[in-house]
Picture (cartoon, rainbow, N blue to C red):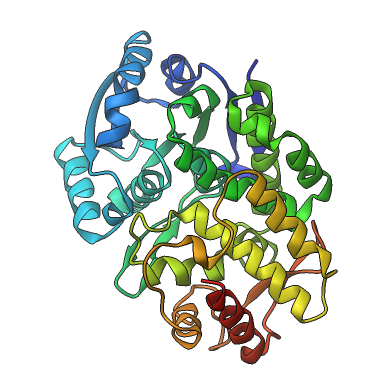
Length: 370
């Protein structure tokens, strides 16, 4: 059964298809968007080995030709060198403005391919086929594209909405456990920021979801996409409500920079740790019940996830240095950091009224537990 979530953005509206077996049917699903029967696919070497042939067969069944470029896997790919390589390859392939670029991969490929499509000939349509849980529930939806620089994460990019998103939940069975759980960090985020009932459901069904329950996975991906679609429709370019989707990310991006975007800390792991730190900060400021951070931590531990700075291998900077890294975050406005805090589970809000001393206290306490 295929479920559809609509992202309502007037003339840029598009569908998110969620269900099993979408990759073999990709040709039929993508064909209505094509002016000529060919697509250019950007992927990574790991995903290519697992899924590229299935996509090729699905496209071929509809008479659609495919060329593909497989980039190295990993966060380091999301930078200028591989971005330039991707754009030059698309030009070599003579991709035209009415053609379609397909992003087949996780968040790194989706962000890079989307940005390449955004700047190529001043804008080419693209289709997201996210292959990780994190990409299915977050990065493939909403049109944020971009790359990292030495100054920080996602600081160069563009808003460029996809024409279609295909979330084949069957693909998730090929993910290593660590990658699946990292993606789950983004799923939990949705319950924490705006749907307490969804968080309740995750507490009950999360372990089954992690073990491979097919219907639970479809429901989790669909609900996450619904929540993101609703927020994006209200605030496409993050002038207000969309910032709520960054719950946990201010801390996460500082930790990713501190670990040099290496496999010491995957993005979704950083989000999970960041969400807990955001709740600890909220509790310290008297905004949410003291029990809430404990409840969040208990669920993350029950799922076997990273929950604290002690779970990050290797050295970390001190609290002052981590706070300085937060200053490079895109959420800085007029020199002030914006935090997403919570008045309770499912009740997140955006604020710049956070004393630096409180942030340092929470960070120092977290570092002391290492």
